[in-house]
Length: 217
Ligand code: MG
Image 1 (cartoon, rainbow, N blue to C red):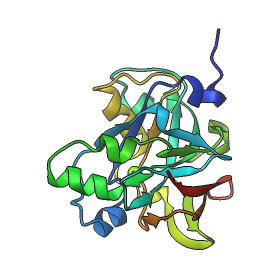
Image 2 (image 1 turned 90 degrees about the vertical axis):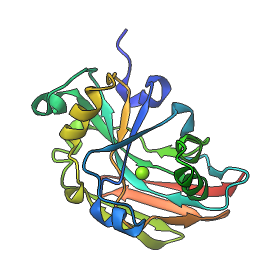
Image 3 (image 1 turned 90 degrees about the horizontal axis):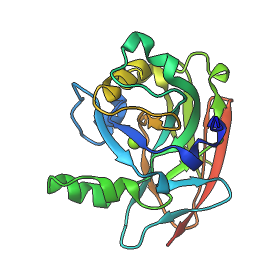
């Protein structure tokens, strides 16, 4: 039976994330500009949808918001050419790559992986599915995020360092992409902390928006 792509979160098997994919965000965290994509994974258990809160995990003192365009894979592929990559895409989502920045900084300083900092429960808030036709040019859309009504992030996917087709080709050369997988394409500048009681609202141009309350665990 054909699986329903608009319910990708129920059966998709991985979330592949791109770090440092916008120049201005590299600069704000004083990270070097990558020469090739920086890839990490989030578990699908980190998904959370509107109506449920983002929970700051116990022991974390500094959780940051990162608003991102997510790409939902409709058709699997391995070693996909950049010229064929968009054939794999079924649609898009708005997502947050919530990050325990203090845990990530500690891991970075010790040369350890970011799995806990990026993979805690509720670290991947997601919107409903946006069919591919609704975003004919994903390389030219705006992302925005407010905390308690104040603008924090505003960017355009024009400023991505590595394009969506390039990323799909790059990832699939190492890791087979499967239907239902999601690729989070990185965040523009303006990341920052949220605390218990904050409300995050974010959107993709006028196409979709979503709202989450933040709570301490
Ligand atoms: Mg991110």
